Length: 359
Length: 94
Image (cartoon, rainbow over all chains, first blue to last red; front, side, top):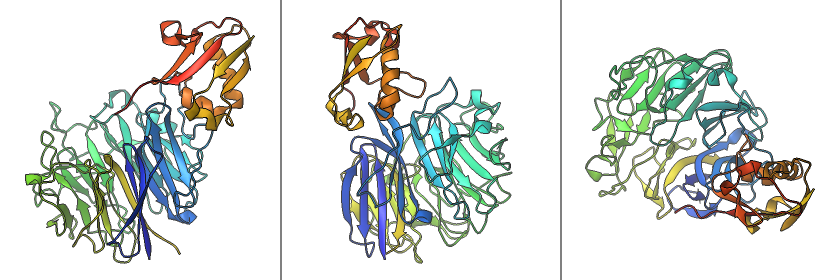
């Protein structure tokens, strides 16, 4: 079994490859000096790799490799472009292939906050006008990292149902293929507003779903960790077993809808792991109880893990991966029980994705 | 009206290696009009110079006969006959 991990950083993309998920060969940088906030493996198309890249000088785009980074293809015309007068693409925050039943469909979330849909595997994208025209849009604000749709969760069965999350703005859901959208933030606290329970405006950092439990979502909020059991209609806190409710990432186990992973960070005002100890937290009962996972992980880890820098692969016994702002990447071959360092001294890690590559 | 555009080395992959391009600009000849002509032949160059609203990218500088266009009229800067447009990435990053 070969596993490849794509590591998007603030200055390029690195690829790590392993047969045993313990020892790794790392190559890069690909797209040197370009920010890579979004990476995705499209395993519906063999092992296609998509990267949302942005040059500080020459602007953003989407780059595609069908040979695991040996060659990259980038359309001469912008693959993602705003067809409206008052916006231009600043950065691609998310590239999300749709389920296997929708071959070729890839969603993109952008800064400024908008959604795009590709039906040709990511070579070109169409603007989802319904979300852009939402009456709430003028009140969506920029978070510290910019105003962006950073999370896209396509329904595993129904192609018309998609959930997105943005900072700030919160969770929105469509059931008609993107024509109309409803805010779905009931129960998610926005402590930074005079009314902490608004209809929208929450700073949701990440939402995850398991395909076998399509009405359940997990969310890591800007303070707050939540679960919804009714398709996002209402959210309940699952933070009581965690050392802190702040963090950016939220990941579901690929084969078990009850198992989730997060990387707690002490607080908005102290963006370090609690006590500076590098720990992934795992729940195996949908958030009721949590375990700290740290065998092989360092103490004195005064850095943070960003929203898309924690992931799993899709092996029978899945591996878990994360990268940090300090340019370190760790892998677990056994669902988080033990950890091994994949790379160090890279630029700030913004996105990590892993896949078992067919041989 | 003919003008010449000098392409920085880092962008020559988008112009089949060409270091300078002669462009025939229809009136009224402006920097923006010259870039529009270039875009028709070299879309991969254009997307790196301008966003989809034809806004000049912040960290790319355009010198018209040696003068940076933002001190003139930006994309509306008029081009004299035979003008030389030099494109240079600005100093940025860390």
